[in-house]
Image: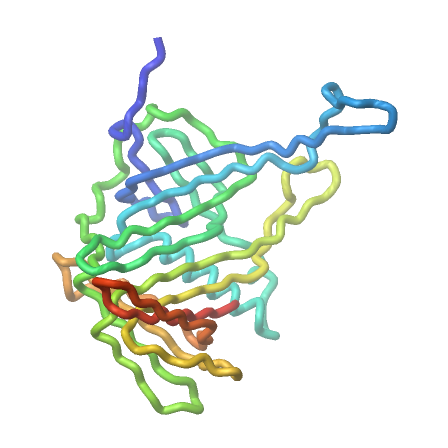
Length: 284
C-alpha cells in the first residue's frame, strides 16, 4: 500500500554555493516535459509509430514562499545581474557568460543544476510579502518525495517581510536634480527575468552548457500622482527597502540603477481611491 504524502512531508530546502536554507514555502509545483514530434509523410494519414524526440527533456520547479530578511534567491539574482553587467562591458571575462545554478530539495526529491528563470513579488499594505520563483534544469531529479522529512536548519527566525514596513526612493540620473522619496504608496511590485542560451551539440541529448544571454528587471509603484511619460524616456535610480515586523533594523534592499519609465496607468472607481501605476524597466 502506497503512502499518501501531505504538505507536512515536503519541507523545502534551497542550495546555493555552500549555503543551505530552509524556505517558508506555501506552494511548490514540479514537472518534467519531453518534446515528442510526430513524423508524417505523404500518403499516410497517421503517425502513431513514427514519433521522435525533438528536444531535451526539461524539468521545471515553481515555488511560492514568504520572503525573509536573508533571502538566498536574492543572492542568485545579484550574481546574475553582476554577470549581466559583465556581458555588456568590453572587459568581460569568459566566465561572465556561464550561468549560475542552484538546487532545491522537496521532501527528498532533489532538483540540481537549476537556472533561475523568473522571480517576482508584490508588497501590499499590512500583508506578508510573498514571492514566486520559477526554475528549470536539464538534469533529471534524484531521490523520492517522503524520504527526507527534516530541515537542514531551522527556518530563518521567521523574520517575514511585511507591507507595514517599506520605503521607496527614486533618485535622478546625472542630468537631473529631483529626488523622489515616497512614504505614501499604495503598493509596489518587482519582477526579475533571466534569459539563457542552451548550447546543443551532436551526440549530446542535453545541452552541452547553458550560457547567460542577459536579464531584465521591472518595478511598478502605485501612487496618487499621475505623471506623464516622456518621449525621450525618464531615467531613475530606484531603491526600496523592506523590513520584518520583528526586526525593523534589518533591511531587504533592492537597487535598480538607470531604470527607464515605460508606462503610467491611472484608474478610479466608486468607493475607491484614484491611483496611478508607474512602471520602470532595466535590461542587462
